[in-house]
Image 1 (spheres, rainbow, N blue to C red):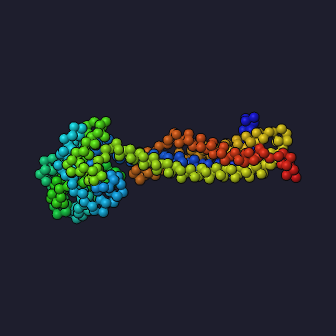
Image 2 (tube, rainbow, N blue to C red):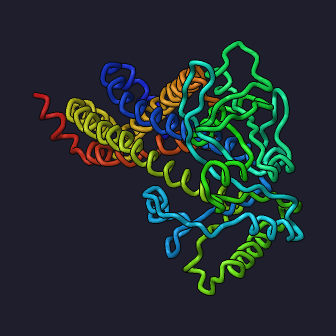
Image 3 (cartoon, rainbow, N blue to C red):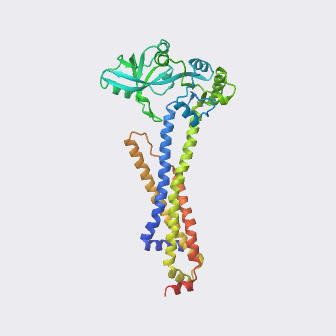
Length: 415
């Protein structure tokens, strides 16, 4: 019975190719949108996670924070952006953190923007003042020359290691090692160039100039506080325990008894990855929900077109019932039509979605994004199941209506 109903449905769809095409189109767009959104979301997620991993998976970040503001809150970000100064984090905190058993080493950091000059070239460039341990923690390596030493940092040496983009801006094809550049009102000797790294979270590491942190603090900014401390742990499995130790140590050193009053924020890399994962999951759900609206519209289109089909084929339905077809036969015929249409739409939609995802990858690559072409197999399976479900849900109403048509009334209606 089901096989006969299926064959009858296929024959009917072939007779009405134009209507079938229009019905399929809504499902095609919906399925393609869902697959493209999931693929794009995975591509973006992979880019961000790769950027995070360039810092290392065994890293704990200790940053200044506005007291009473949440660690990852907008209040904290806005407060710091508006110029609220937190001056309690010092190099002595770094030394104390380095004494913890699971901490291998740490580097401190401060940033500033200064006018940098060489010959006739003048550029506003961000200075990244860091401890010498930066080069042993960060994944970026020196391409030419060397990084500055701890002795140069303690001795307030005017030495600089420039990013690859800075080298292009200042020197072009000229020699650059041991060349004097002017930063602010002081001369610095270029001792190295970092290898090209690109942007990380929209921050171009190639456009930085690295200088000893104490040189930047004492000779240029006149400060003794830090913006952040980055610590590397020897055992990543104990990262959460180490983060808790750092929090306890910092509260002791800053005389803080109430955690709400913390003027620092400790974030293990594992926590940062978890936050990113939850954010991407929420964004993906939202985008899928938006894309699924197309599927609902396609389902409504199927239902409307099938209602029209039932009206046009009333005489056919009456004739089939007159020669022995049951209401169940008619019901399954129209249900099969709905399911076949949605399944065809899903197949074509999957093919279109894959092609659109590949096109996005090519466009991103042309803009120098390391975008991977990712198709999640579960999204293809889910799309097929959703398509069949839509066919059943939106096809059942017109199918039941067709099954209940009285054959005598149907045959008379054709006169």
